[in-house]
Image 1 (tube, rainbow, N blue to C red):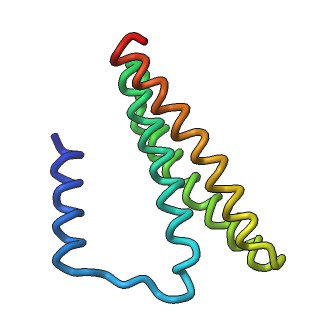
Image 2: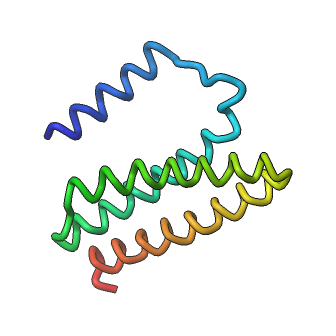
Length: 110
């Protein structure tokens, strides 16, 4: 129940406060969101398999976002930012769809 309350509070706070992202950080936001989604979908899969651990989720969530943002930063420094961003999105997208497929198979037994 506490996570649902926290999610609702976060959504309401975002809608009311309407935060802006500094221009320097804007290239990293989409990658960070995809990395966070990967951690959340992975947590949902683990929850369905009854092996969810909140510590693993928090570490996975933070490390996914930090590593993905660092890879994009490194790509920007090397002059290949868009290509590396695409690679990060592809890899994380594959993981998201793989976890979503596992969840679907578990729910529908197919």
